[in-house]
Image (cartoon, rainbow, N blue to C red; front, side, top):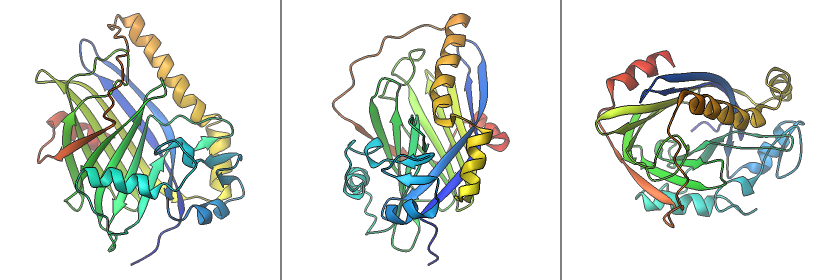
Length: 272
């Protein structure tokens, strides 16, 4: 089995589209890192402008994920996978997330990709954060080879312009070179919102990170600024504001495999 680099870079874009009670759509470029959580020492040595648990132009800090402590991430991840009945049998776990850029990081979503000993993708953790400092995990098995579809109730407050109700439908296509993710929100039989990520893998070289710094300065901070800018636009359009409820003590929700996703999701996937 081919061993992949401890660290990779993904470049692409995200699209968000609201359908109810009015249409609102935006598209932003994004950059993600992809780290093998068992090989962080290797990732730390891969580029002079990228560090693990140290300040640099770009970095990855363990305390930004999992239980929020500066500890080995694997026990936490294996425990979360086990809640969904997934046994990785010691296989690799790769974390696709937004990098810390200089002093700042905010990751609306991070993907924990769990593989078995033969390298097959067996499960995924969607680690979702809101701007209030809260985190929730949606965990799902990935029994298919290419396209993974699963659904779960929405239980976590993400945006003040959506209440905590409805159903999430996830569609994931993942390979060593391409990432396609669709998260569609449905309520009362209608699709209210859709978010996508489309990205391609690139070597995580120093030149690639420096290029990212010049082409997307303050890339991590711009994620948060973009969220608040779009929130202002929604407020001006008359979107209903929902106060943040108290977060549930249950921090992990299991998503179940689905055979179909909305046709609108399939159309958007083709153009993402």
